[in-house]
Image (cartoon, rainbow, N blue to C red; front, side, top):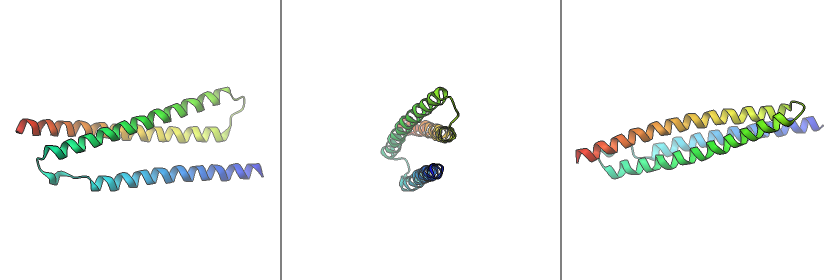
Length: 128
């Protein structure tokens, strides 16, 4: 019976993680479509707004990355101290490592976007 409860809890945990990831991804897609794009022209205030938004997103992603790395370190330490390999712990560790990699990829994409926006802003300043 306890094994069944653990399976249900694990599946609920996986469903919550997948739901959070999908919700975060959909939210990112909808907020990106609402942000002003290239049709704004040469307005430096809009470029500055987009740059500041990217900096805020970048800071949030770095904070999430740090928290996830701390969780992975704690789980690794816990795994090293347990005499027997706990399958649930290994699965949670793998889930966090996958999330960590996704955050790293998203952070790299944000860093690239910030670099492009800073370059656009500098070009607009020079054109004036």
